[in-house]
Image 1: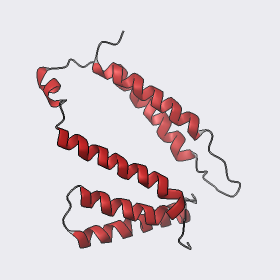
Image 2: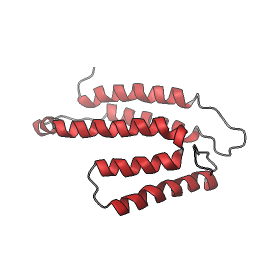
Image 3: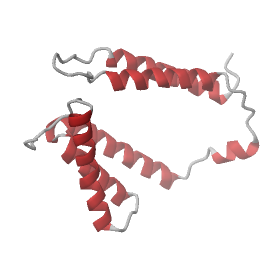
Image 4: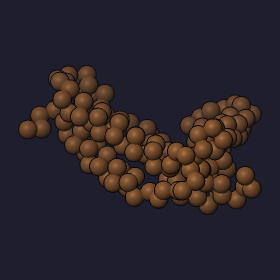
Length: 152
């Protein structure tokens, strides 16, 4: 039944999508929010299910070049694990410190770790992007984001 790598990966992703959708349906609803906080997670979950189904039925014959490309150097695996650790700390600190502060710290330290050398540009982007996103979500979309320790 599972002949290609795409089919094997799609089953794993389908299980992840099902768990993600299950958790997104358990998000609380807020009475005064026009667009509730569960709209985006549900939409992304259903999009993932659609893409997983498309991946499952995609015909792909694996060549030797593709098999060789699948081997990842140990240095890249360590960098990938470090970025996963950054994401874990981002998720852990999101409610505590708030969206703006946590996102700014995540963007700055993750880009610094990945080798971005222009620190002034990095600081400007790390501060302005979360502020812009927070303002867009709270004012235009009427979606509440964690404010954390900041007063807004």
